[in-house]
Length: 161
Image (cartoon, rainbow, N blue to C red; front, top):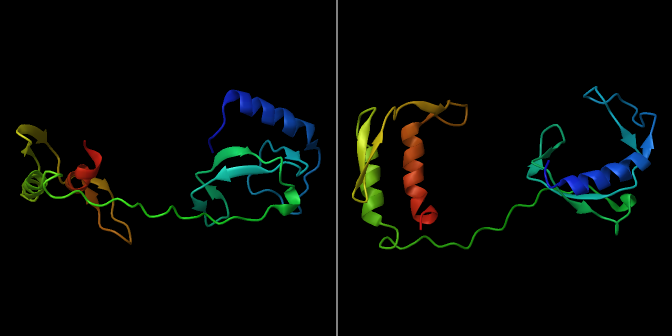
């Protein structure tokens, strides 16, 4: 995970070293053998994370802080919370270069592995448009460089100043 700086890491290491125990407290062997260190469960860490994986691990964990105000006995498993929906309205066609977006999408819809896209009075050479960047999966067809460019053009009104 993330969320540490060198100072915080050093402080946490000192606190964990003071809580070290020699024996493995678990009945089953850990799934990942290696240099394991066990400590008495006396610290509570607050972390942010995306979700739980199928094998019960945190996905994209980030350390927030130690919780000195909460005893370990009160800790329960937390489910990831979805971010609130964004309250962003789509820009009006005039504000987002409506013709420009439509023109570029039209150009990308034409046949050919390479082309020169006309964009805002300029020209952009693109090649290998049918190159697969993301292979096909059971849920989705293969995605190509052309698909990526189409996506970027479609979201450009929200990304570009």
